[in-house]
Length: 249
Image (tube, rainbow, N blue to C red; front, side, top):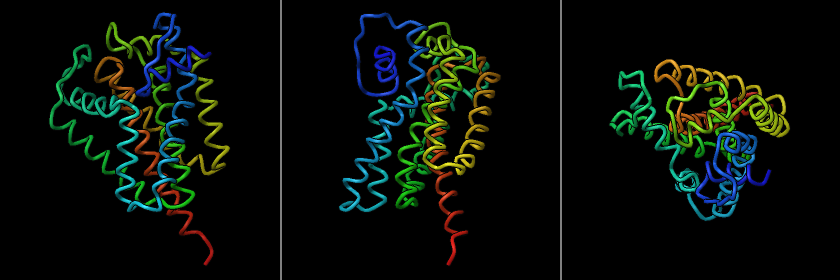
């Protein structure tokens, strides 16, 4: 279990780990169980930074810093995945076996996502901001597992292909149990307002990648993490606004 947890850290964060065991499909797939936990650790990190600097930094500057911190600790691979996936989807080619060049469309989509993420965090206050910082990264990493389990690999080799090959039903079920268990424990029935639209986003993007590109590679489940994380922050803004509108005067 320790090896699988360290593998998850290796895949999702800037932390480099060494293991005596080979990085094969079995180890990579079983590490998927720990993806939500790694997401929670990332959420705890940005929450701690937010709590520390909230009294001294303007909200917008702090939100930019938190988004930048998430990108740094993730090695920027999810941001790079957004650019490459977008360009591949708009390339007109049905094959994802080659690595697409970084084009202007992908950069524009990435810029839009980052603006949405910063703006959403900037609008969240108090408990909603705290819970969004915890749950957003967790839901994004869990989405990677769902996508990998429900997809076929687009390439013949690479860490992303190994991960897609390795994720089986047990890993998908356990990671989902952890992610959804944490979600509904923290926000109870309001979690449905997150699960339904995020589930639709995960299914839609997964089907689109499989049909358009012939499968899924590491770039695509990296992009999925960024999309779901951003969408989760935006949904928390809507959830907070709905609660404020229905609160008694």
